[in-house]
Structures are given as C-alpha cells and as structure tokens.
Image 1 (cartoon, rainbow, N blue to C red):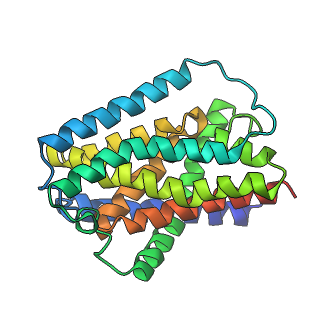
Image 2: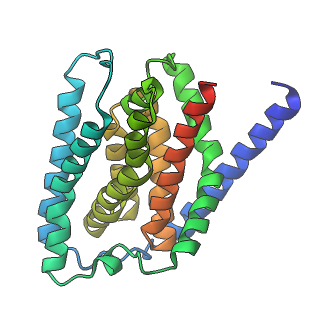
Length: 266
C-alpha cells in the first residue's frame, strides 16, 4: 500500500468517526426521543427478559460445543427453515402481544414514518459512512487475535464459501439478505432496544443490544466489528425513527459480505 492510499484510508476513517460522533451527540445529547417507548409495559419487560435469556442460553450452548469442521453437502434449505422457526418462536409471541394490546405494528416500529425509498436512501448513505469504521475495527481485531480468514469466519459465511451450486447458495442469500435483516432488526433494534430504553435509557439500550447482537453470531473475531455495526444500526433507528432504515443497512451489509466472498473465490 503506497502512502497516498494509506492517507486516503486514514481520511475516510476520520470522516466516518467524525460523522457518527456528531450523530451520536445530536441524537443522544438531545435525549434520543425519536423512538417512542412509553407504550411498553411490564408485559414487554417480561417478554424481553425471556428473549434475552433464550439468546444467552443459545450462546452458552454453542460455546460449550468444541469447534468442528463443517460437514459436506449441508442442506441449506433445512438450515433456513430452522432459522425461520427460531425467529418465529421469538417474534411470534412479541408481535401477537403488541397487537392484542391494540398497538399498530407500523407505528410501534416506525415503518410508516417515512417512505420506503427515502428509508433505503438514508440507509445506503449511513452504511457507506459507517463502512470505514466497521472495516477498521475488523482489521484491528483480526490482527490482534491472529485470525485465520479461512477458518475463523462466521459459520454461515463458511457454508456459503463451500457451496458449489445455486440451489445451495440461494437459500443462504435469502437468509442473509431478507430473513436475518428483518428478524434481527425486529428483535434487537425494534423490540429489545425499545424495552431497554424504556427502563434504562437510550445509551444503555444501544450498548446492551449491541453486545447481544454481536454475541449471537457466535464468532469471536466478528464480535467487535459487529458491535460497532449494531451501534450504528441503533443510532440510525433513533435518528430516523423508522426500523426500515437499519433493516436496509443490515440487508446491504450482508449483501456486501456475500459479494466479497464471491469476488475472493475468482
């Protein structure tokens, strides 16, 4: 890497840090009241606590199993169905409870706050601004942890790398670009962030949901960049008031990750 390229990267990183530092001060310095949480009650506190315990139990169960090589010919369709079942069990009771209490889901999660096109454009802009920071943290974490890029990536990425047919890869693309962004944003930013903010405040909600989000991906080298990404997603939710914005950012980030895998294999 020549000096000019190095200076450009440092400049981009500085801009990224500056943008999100200013956005953080703008959002949370002003009270962080864009995402309304006053309608959450003790029922949501109980449900959120159950979800957190379920996530922690999954993390502990997975960390207690020694790492194994991926089996050949993984049925990716079955894997997607398993993920859908998992998130259905978590989100189903939450969404039913909110509707049963007469709350409009569009209003709860702010999806009707701004047009879809505007949400997408804002999400693209914020993600582009955040990428230098996320990649820088990823690089530092990988260097310090002495990561082997061929074995220390997330399991779903390794499955995608090892897939040889479109029939194997399409379910993973669906999982990464549609299912995960919708389900994870509903759970972490949409619900857990709101409930924790209701009882502890915005900044603790940002940190706690970010830590849970990073941990549930069950990959130590990814923990710190995912924590940064989760914090940016929560900030974008609070900035816009619409869950569509972090959903769009999440989907685009996962799409980029898969594209980088494909490019690296050529």
